[in-house]
Length: 221
Image 1: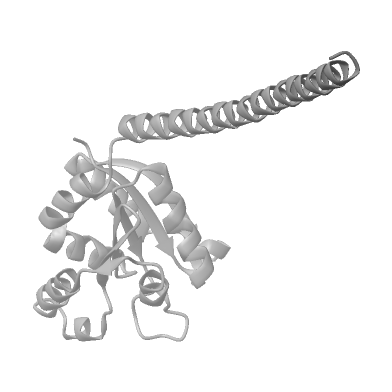
Image 2: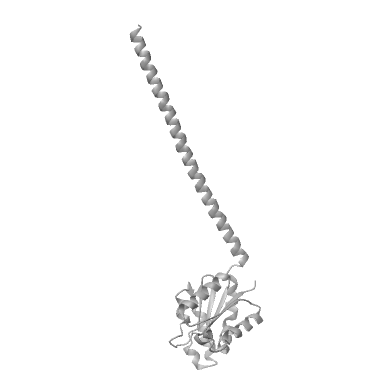
């Protein structure tokens, strides 16, 4: 099954148009070369809310793998790890450990990187460095495991649609059943009341007839 990928570039200056986004296109080129389908692309500023909104959106569209490049350093505006950790279901520390360990073989500055991977909804989210070469290198270190997770975490779109259709049918059936049950209760109440009225009227008639009979017997022995 082909992996559906979302790519997010997280950068204040790139989102403002101060310079061209290079990290996103670099990841897209690698993803397409691998054979992944890039379902969505976005450039957002270094703001936690915007990062989280975009991740949720891509996950909701069916992305099983979301690659975020940028915001993993130690600058005051580097908030990508915080944004992901605040919304994740579980973190996968091994991804970050491997990316840092392998990157240390290339540059000692990798020790300052805060790359990570986590599960958000049904998607695997990987936070990569903002530098295009670093993002591509780190992705190559964890690509095999990312493919495995990206394949199994998210359902194919047609299965999602089928499940939603089943849920809708169940809700309709439940509402119909509740309506029918309510109608049955009302019918039973009405039937009981009518039977009660009939029994009451017949009882009154019987007592009246008994009273009349008694009177006639006393008057005419």
